[in-house]
Length: 350
Image (tube, rainbow, N blue to C red; front, side):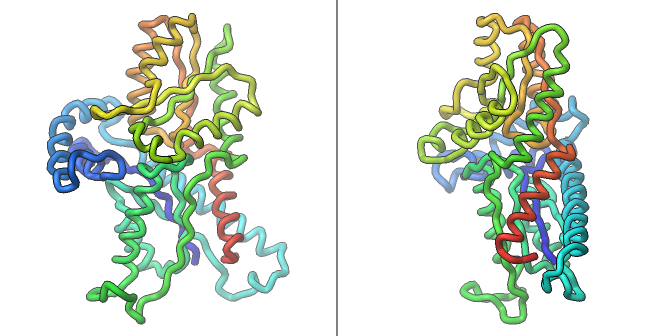
């Protein structure tokens, strides 16, 4: 059996979960370093307490919880169905001996979250109980950054050591009675052709929502502290790579900005707020926002873009609309399916 685990951020599943979710988020030094390491968790605790009320108000406006888990579970279900359908089809048409075994490989897709339930380690425990020995760890962040994919994979590797060993194991070696496990990591897929097609499809649909005048397109990516990029993080290059691939398929006037910054450090520029003012000065009246680094709806799309930025744009005389998120669109699921299939074929699992 081949297990696929979708790695994602996670989000609070109730208003009561907001504070511990924020604590987990700000405790991660791969995202933001809050003083010396021994002060990270105490400072994270203070930040979580300070921000909890305002953040709870935002979540309350979008239904009282993050929709991210529900969407990711739906993506996992759709991906599992697509993978097994593909395998069944290929098994029928191939004469390769690998497909003649009595017990053919079966894909099972799981969800592992970084900062809230189901945590990556809990999902790995489920995979262990299911007897999974071959794992594709697929990050749902299209663009690699040490703060997102890097942090998730780091947590995955740490949890893997704990889970795939017996209780009372010795740190220096695996217990011989435990099954071996092989993992293939998918770090980045920012220019995958089907992913690009999925985005182009949503952008074209969004453009059709403007009946009078073709809008300007604003790609809004999640921001990062500038120091990560200065240190060699490929995030911005990969964001630009995605936009370049899109612009080759569709004729648009576009700009790039960054949203969701927090804390006093220098973040990527320009911010989406700043860009809205700049576009207003340029005389832009119609604006289509593409949340380029997000593949699912969550608070950054449903609250930050759909409420805060839309209201700001309206005051500036701009009609702001957002493309539909990829979520479980057929083309996006097709892209994820192709990514997994190519990886398992490359390493000879099927």
